[in-house]
Image (tube, rainbow, N blue to C red; front, side, top):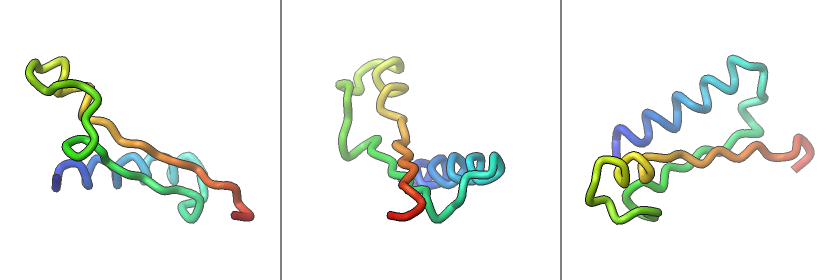
Length: 60
């Protein structure tokens, strides 16, 4: 789970470097908690290593 948090933070940092307001960003890792593949092959594991980043409306 620690690596997932690092990935999420890296994604947010990358977007901030591209001038996205950090207050508009919300990043969540769902890897182990909400899998989308059965995790038996390396391809499945790759699919589960994902981060969801949401950019909110500035006035939200």
